[in-house]
Length: 165
Image (cartoon, rainbow, N blue to C red; front, side, top):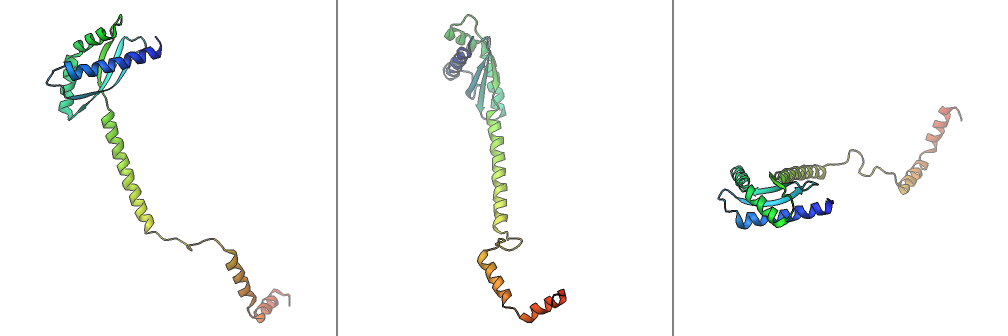
């Protein structure tokens, strides 16, 4: 089968399972379940249905038990709706997406706090040397003119010590 056909089957299974959970499955253990993704093998014999549950760990385990008990009904409805020769087996897998998103959000929060601490330290920081370490030509010319205005006796005494007098 082509990957396009497998993708269409996966999309259709996604819709069928979501509608079944919304309308036909009346198990009290079933919490607020959202089907996030469906992956079908290349030969369309097996489908992995990824889902999330809003709530705590108790609600997740109760929803997993409810989905496991309703697997046969859901699979028969998938087979009837798809009209395939072989109905794919269904496997319900709790998606780790919310936990991963919470972990990433926690890491981003720590990075923001660290950046704020660095910015606060940088705001109070001063330069180790001169505030402007670069030489400017107009100031250099003034320094040379100031050196030319020194006593000529100082220049001759320097030349005398060099042996050039």
